[in-house]
View (cartoon, rainbow, N blue to C red):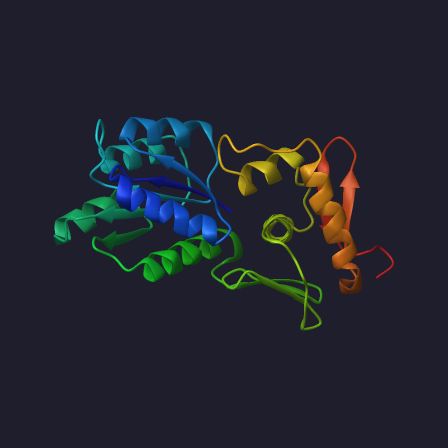
Length: 224
């Protein structure tokens, strides 16, 4: 999953970037409202953490612009202001959640996970396909309740395929969600992750089919 952190205070921004990368998210950062607006217009994110007090244009204006463009990405607003009218303004402009500084990092991480679940799986913390279960919060996968040994990248690829089970997902779509902007992506990296996943989910009676020229498809074998 890919997150944009729009925060101009370096200490807070670096702390958030470090925390979410440690939790296996791809993370991009914007230090101004204009930079955030440009990234949102050109890149795809699963969640946007948006500080209201950004320089150049504030978080309210960034939020207003992205919703005006039809962007439906969940947005969590961060602010030092605790007035009711500030919260109401942000929610009326299209924010999905709101957190006042100072905040507890575990709460922020939990709210981000909830927004991702709400956007992709109707609020459930688990994705299930046949006897394959992925715990999105705990970043663990099981087949018939037996744990699978998966790397962080493999978990990320599996999550994307399970969220879109029955639909073709391109290499580009996978790469943009598991890598941060500017992070080097090996030419065959996605193929390697998919190849490993195929072997590891064999006992789940599922297959990851390659659709030549288009991408990958998670599906049950046709004889099942």
